Amino acid sequence: MPVRPVLRLGHPALSQPAKAVAEFNTPQLYALIQDMLDTMAAENGVGLAAPQIGEPLRLVVFGMQDNPRYPDREPVPATVLINPRITPIGDEQEGDWEGCLSLPELRGWVPRHRYITYTGFDAEGRPMEREASGFHARVVQHEVDHLDGILFPQRMPDMRRFGYQQELAATVDNGTESY
Image (cartoon, rainbow, N blue to C red; front, side):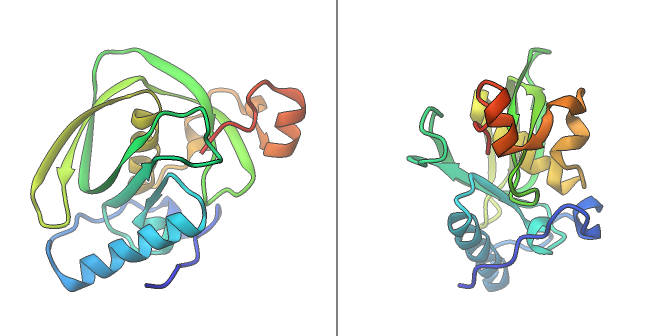
């Protein structure tokens, strides 16, 4: 399947809420999912939301095993998540560096819920529910934000901790550790 261009910051499709997927288990849905997985792999990403490739649907893919960009991160299970909902478990948040395929080379310090439950459906329409913490929880929250038209800088409390990876790495501990 083809690798699709990833829309970049400023494209109007990235600021629009996505629509729920209405039909599961279709050739069109499987083709879109494969395009997303191929695009994510080609970009060395950990996650990708359908709006990032111009598809205004509530669909995300994510996962990571041994990614050289994130050698110190725990694995994240390969997941296709459709029409997701996130519920924080408690109020605990933690900050960490994030990046985004739609904001190449930019990084920012973003607080996120440390523990979450997420629900949704797989490609066949079967319900799923998982608990996640740490990096896994961060990836899910980041990707689901895309479905609501939110990019990570909108979650940042301090824009002084936002910049290009190369400049941040020279001045900030772990400035390059992001996704």
